[in-house]
Image (tube, rainbow, N blue to C red; front, side):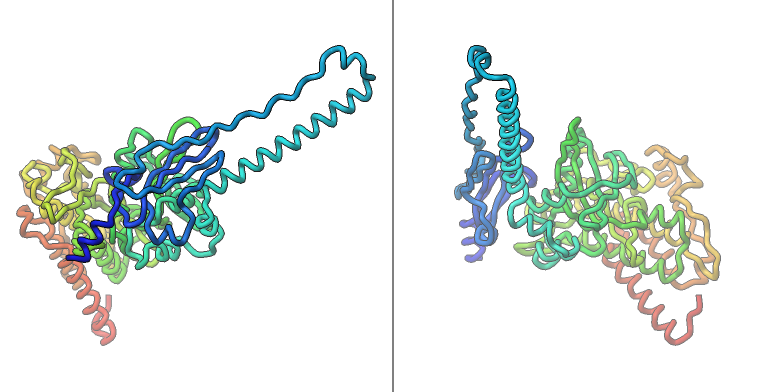
Length: 486
């Protein structure tokens, strides 16, 4: 505790443009910079760690097109820097009419040609000089080496987040990566905007583009993705957040890993799955949700997070047959120290079809964080139902269906869902045929325990993960003994 207190004494608070509450803390220094970009001064403010100060030149850089300063007191970078004004060179004195009349036409023409050529050469050199300086500002030496690296994004993120479980790349590196991404094609649309497939050094990435009117949604999702210790193999890998001016308006980018199979919704519409594939998909989804829900205590700890919009369209399928949970824009974090929940005032968010009974009838306890985790579990049970419906046993499987598709319209209202789920207490049908397969029988039992009207009686994500993992182990043993043939 004495050491932690000493660390707090050394911690500086600084202005940070892309940080929660626009504030960051560091044991190094606050920095403030201004650079010339497209004829305008662009200001950046953030923190720099003592490690970065040792390894790179950050402080006290100054030229006609850039300036950077560091300071060492709380919020000392809350000032606006300006570049020095560059005085224009005096214009050359033009020849008067009397002088021109006294000179023979041919020499004058040759002289004008020479002067014009010289001016163009000088201007070209000057432009090249300023472009080089601007390039140096936008891509510091540490970042230029990044652009020349042969490492994959996965390796790069692992290197820059120490253990591979950090909160993402440094902000300056995020800007460097995002500004060199080339967009190729739209792969999805939503209420926020569009999702594109892009390329960075030949590697596919997904770019979620928000319009400027959705800035708070973009900032919220970037903030959640940059939570310390959030990175996990079953959570969508965050790469960068940046704003881009396309000339007409400002775009807000969220760059993440790309998964070519798309969402679980798309995958199940196109393919049926074997029993083994169903177990793998189900375990990975539970594993991702368990990591979100779990609080990690420590100086580099992670708060408990509830997703609040679990559905098959917000779960992506990886090449190896596992899943990642995506779209964290509606997620809420729990501060266990102050027992506070970071949540907007509107409690009815998410997708109506997947809303838990207590959300539909307004009985959810908004002051208890466990309530939000339990609502996620109800939604998870519906996703498992979608998955189990497409499980093929001896070549037999059902067509893909959305939960409650036989009971409510294609775009149900909250009232439609409330009548079915709360008043009539109906749930998706669990087929009797599932009893003939151990894996489907266990999945059906898990679904029922996710759908309890009494939220407190529902399973936890960790319990679900352990149960399905044990099913996988049991199945492997039976396969080895030749006792299970599906």
